[in-house]
Length: 295
Image 1 (spheres, rainbow, N blue to C red):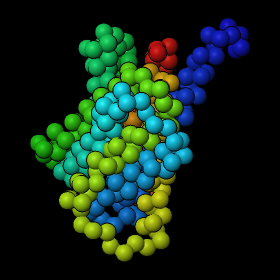
Image 2 (image 1 turned 120 degrees about the vertical axis):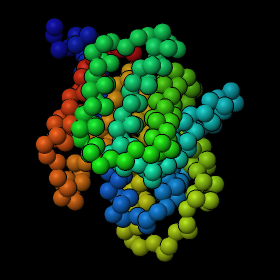
Image 3 (image 1 turned 180 degrees about the vertical axis):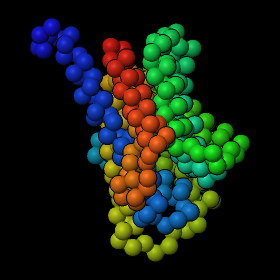
Image 4 (image 1 turned 90 degrees about the horizontal axis):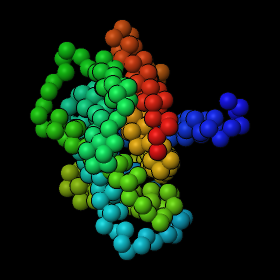
């Protein structure tokens, strides 16, 4: 088939959108090292608040788009699922579980999206897509788990609920139609989710200590790159790619975190962990390839 043929151009467009959307989880993967190395300790909800609320305000000051009244209920739901509730559950799981186990449990998100599309939309996943998603979970387990991993029921429940929250949010974002540009939709979700985090941060975290220049730089990075840019690219991908393909790209976040730990902090990746890393990459690639023709 000639490269200029419309059917030949469709896979190229798909892979271009995959690469652009993958920037979002790659940025989120850098959150771990920025948080651990540059932020004041033990203030997770404050970090989530300062990451999301200012980003939402900046976007809305730029776009100045007010959603139709009929969309407010849906925006509240999406702001909670994709931002507010998800951030709370993410940090509860992070505090109660080893980071590796939390990431492995979060890797069920593509399977949950497939289940929603099958159960509600009546579209069962292709078998190879299903098994590719399962392979992603197995690869994450090889990469991040160890025999000393501690299982804690509340943390496990929070991690699974967080994965379900984001999976449902991604599915509904694609399913519901809004008369808003993607950037405005992103801004309203960040604003709503950030406002939900205000009482949580106020009650759960200690006040911030005096901040140095590196603290300010880290919070600025988390806001402008980790929220404003990353979520804009993420929701752009949700609008343009198959929902399962977008959810699968989320596996890149802990993978990037591991690679940055290896490159910056000198952490080792060898043996089973290296095999797991390769398995996760192969899983993500396979899901993108098998969903390239979907809508």
